Length: 72
Image (cartoon, rainbow, N blue to C red; front, side, top):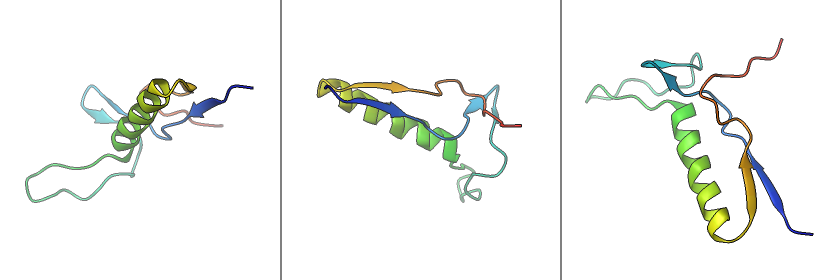
């Protein structure tokens, strides 16, 4: 049986300049930039997906949307 990997970046991204996940960010750095956990996670998830694909391992990013999924 071939492996199939599901990848979940865990948080939303930036939509129209607004980060979608409350909190989950670094303090402002001296140059005015800031790291958003969701953006970082999405970049890592994309890289893992590409590496798996190059190795012939099927995978799917299960939450490609930039919005956070909120459970009720």
